[in-house]
Length: 243
Image 1: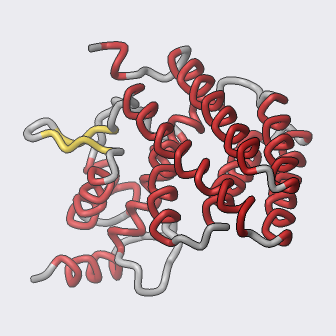
Image 2: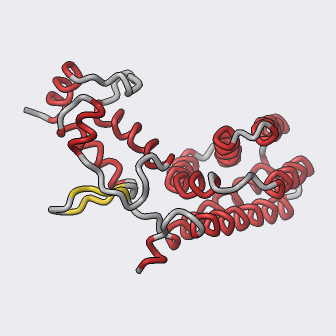
């Protein structure tokens, strides 16, 4: 019997109330979405073993869709599948975080240059509106809302190019960095300097100053990377520090 058929049977008999139904989305993908959120938020901490039995009880299903979901997360680098020892939440590795920030910085640098050269004023106005949401979250001292608004702002920079391949690569990298950035951000207040850097970037975009805009986003991402790694080393265990 195929895995999809087995999953349909599990879905029929299991209590999946904690999973948001999505049309045509396989059960194991829905479980992967939920587990990904649990890992990113720290509910499943880095380095902790993952009990398939406990997950079966939690979701009210058997191991087949659980194992399929863990394979998805292993491919994303969030889970390590260890033979004879069981799965575990992957460690956060400083070198991996730094490598991904390098690529994000290059993609966003290209994107703001493209915006200066090609994007209509309406695109910059959209970015300004997203930044206002970020400001509201900061003023209200809502770190999770701030984090989400900030991530949306940076994704919108790349989406403005209309280059779907670039958008997909950037979105994947942002997803990989989300755990490090969220857990690092949770340990400190949101710095005003990041807000000021966004403001400076928006000013350069409105002025269509390509060189200054690229320099602004590169400086911002350098600062985000440095602060993320600093805060992580002060709390969340980094694998590089234990080798």
